[in-house]
Length: 270
Image 1 (cartoon, rainbow, N blue to C red):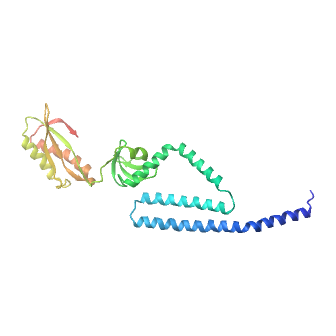
Image 2 (cartoon, rainbow, N blue to C red; image 1 turned 45 degrees about the horizontal axis):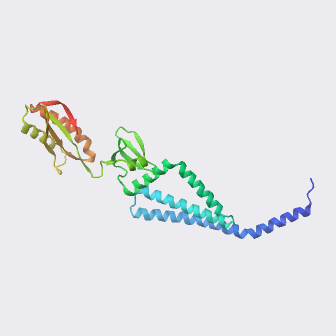
């Protein structure tokens, strides 16, 4: 195959001329890219430090920093291709159409995303709290953007979608720091009511894990067809609630037996 040296020389000359003419744009575009990436990295670090100093929630800090990082990267990319001389209007149109299509296909995920934002901002619970929601009682391990990760009492990890979580009822057992156990004991009508009340109250007062403020309560709750029902209500720190609940059941049963007070053959939890 024969190549004309004159034609080849002309092509090389034209390529060199185009490269020389285009090199200022190319150099300036890459300068903008590298300087922009470095500036974005510094800005992101500074924003994170400011939010940490202001004691913002760690989940909110990470989320806002990530949103800012990607927003600045997109702006930098648009500036980069614009400096190269590429028309950006069509690119922005395509990007918008893609965003709309993705949004329509991920409506459930966007609902969870919005729910995660509501949880992070309004803080109905935080990491470490024990909550009851969506039929689950568990301790919160991590609040993610789309789901909340929790650990149940029997060591099962549960992921609850933030959309359902933010729109449903949430019972936070840890927010107040103290919790009351509501128990009901039923005794026979033949029993001495005053004595039964004294025995039950003594059990609560002898338990060091039962708080004195608020004071524990024992009172007649109801008179049924077959028994006298006593409400037994000890207060405890959240960490001691489980042991106070079980100890109260066991110790009250033992104390009533020793006092000769007949218990009806059932104990109700209200």
